[in-house]
Image (tube, rainbow, N blue to C red):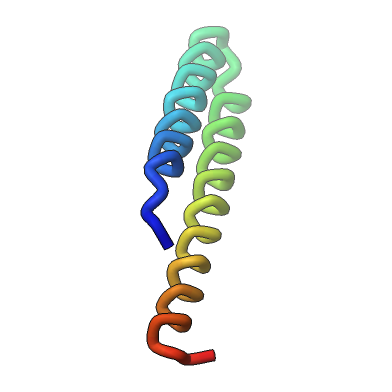
Length: 67
């Protein structure tokens, strides 16, 4: 399982986009929408991280022959 640097950039990109949208919505007086967008961004990133952790555990099982 080679280390995928693109995953770090994807997570950082999502964070930057969510932060920008949050700021714009907050300035427009839509604070509740801004919070929902932030929550959605966190859920998306957690889903991505969970899939990478799952891949990591599968690789550990493969390396130590725990089929």
